[in-house]
Image 1: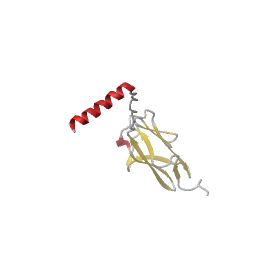
Image 2: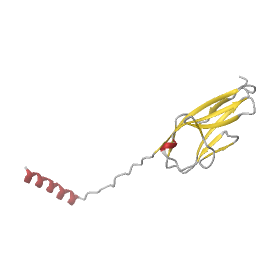
Image 3: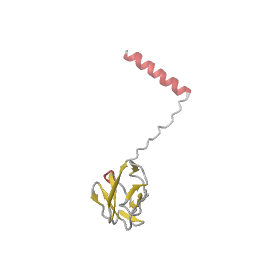
Image 4: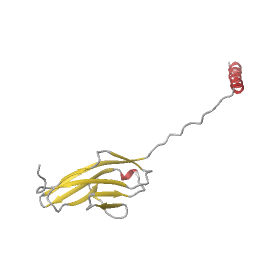
Length: 133
């Protein structure tokens, strides 16, 4: 398949959906590969709106790589799309990204019962049932 003289062929280097914890401190990275007739211009959207490249969103490698800076919120979730255009046409691809809260489980403390404590607790339970009943 010859792509050097054609409209852009675009694909993401990750599979959808992508899950990212909002507690991550490292920037989130999306990369695309593009083939086709040069020059190719690449634009980025989130939920069908053009991303404003600046403080939180940065691009590198001729816009082939999008960096989203932390801190993240669940509202950063959505469909991130790359649009590649040349003189032959445009190609759009998107990937679903879910920023989620990472829930941690706290292990309950381990309680050791001494034999004499267990006996007194059992005696208390038996006595209280006897008194109630």
